[in-house]
Image (cartoon, rainbow, N blue to C red):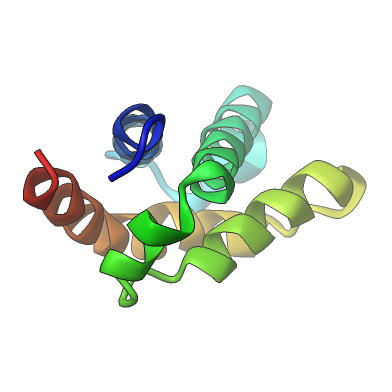
Length: 113
């Protein structure tokens, strides 16, 4: 990995783990009722996407199985479409997509140590 990739990839992992922790033991009804949970998830996913967008092309090329474009696109939708965030999509991202992504990110981080 290049320069700041050694910082950005761990940032992605930290935020992914944080998002997973936020939803642990919670339900989608909690997300609908708890504005703090909603905003915390949005922020964690935004930071993940920002870090992904700043990873080098070389770092992303090492792990083509990681949906880099989708991660960055989600960040862009959250940042620029903040008034129309779909709670169902947010919940799916936090409870399905991110847990599936974490092992890929961890493998990438350990393969480049």
